[in-house]
Image (cartoon, rainbow, N blue to C red; front, side):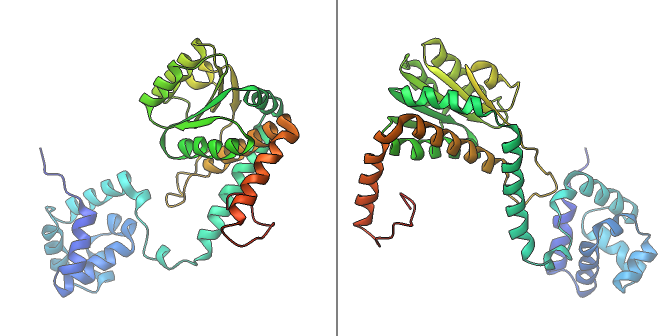
Length: 293
């Protein structure tokens, strides 16, 4: 079996520590990888301002047999990992693109959520939460566990007994001691995290109310009694931008918290007042600041 060559890394090393002609050739290749994978030896040498024998020596120096093998391996590297390789021109793009990409992703996710979410399911789920003796918020991975933790942050202020678990074993154990007074809220973007699905089934088997915030038709959706379904497609080309699905998840958390607070009514106000009073003794007294900032 031929040795595996990370050709991109080999070219970068040549650019950093090779001879002057090797550095110039490596810079030329890295500036336009697609061109380098298709160009003839004559065209590549001309663009780099070097000779054809230098190109041949360079190809061998980076671990390939010659220009044909070099171009084949470079095309292969681009096919496998090309989406993760930025052109040098992209590095000089305006900084504004980061602001616009994240903001557009968040706005787009929330607009999709607005169109998809079933308001009746939100109110139904909030009713279960408002009547619960205890609430368990489950999530696995990055975005879903953040949503579960945010659920705890939103609900304890309303005077509810709530705990968050992102570990599969803890989810299973706490589900095993759930009862008819427990509400389990499970978050999963895919809906196919097996430990999470099993924990919801266990809790439901012991009489707990189960709410799934997940993809429609998923295993988690099938396991729960109440399903708040949503789907935000990912843009595979925007690799440096965090998933905008996080904003949809937090949007659902806020919807649930707001609907729950409304169902609980004025009795939540005293707890909120106490929190605000306690925090404002430690910092500037500005009523415009959110509770818990």
